[in-house]
Image 1 (cartoon, rainbow, N blue to C red):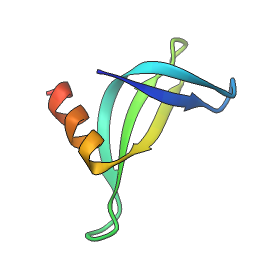
Image 2 (cartoon, rainbow, N blue to C red; image 1 turned 120 degrees about the vertical axis):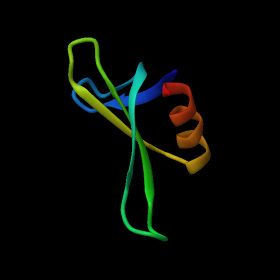
Image 3 (cartoon, helix red, strand yellow; image 1 turned 180 degrees about the vertical axis):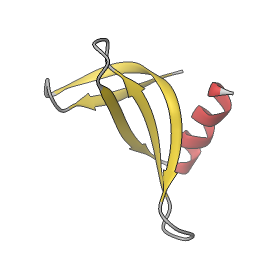
Image 4 (cartoon, helix red, strand yellow; image 1 turned 30 degrees about the horizontal axis):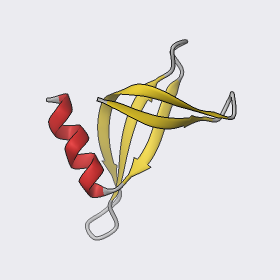
Amino acid sequence: MNHKFYDVKTKSSVTAAITEVKSYGTAGRTRYAVKGKTKDGRPLTAFVSKADWEKAKAAIK
């Protein structure tokens, strides 16, 4: 599954495959993130809604 990330180094949007889904925070204050990598191997992170996070989680498994 692909997602649109913002690449801070190049200051542009890039589309990359989602490699990992992760949640941060405590109960009631949870943030959901998807992770990917650029073509040259730099990490990318995008915070998404819970619905998008669950879709990505199902697609990765």
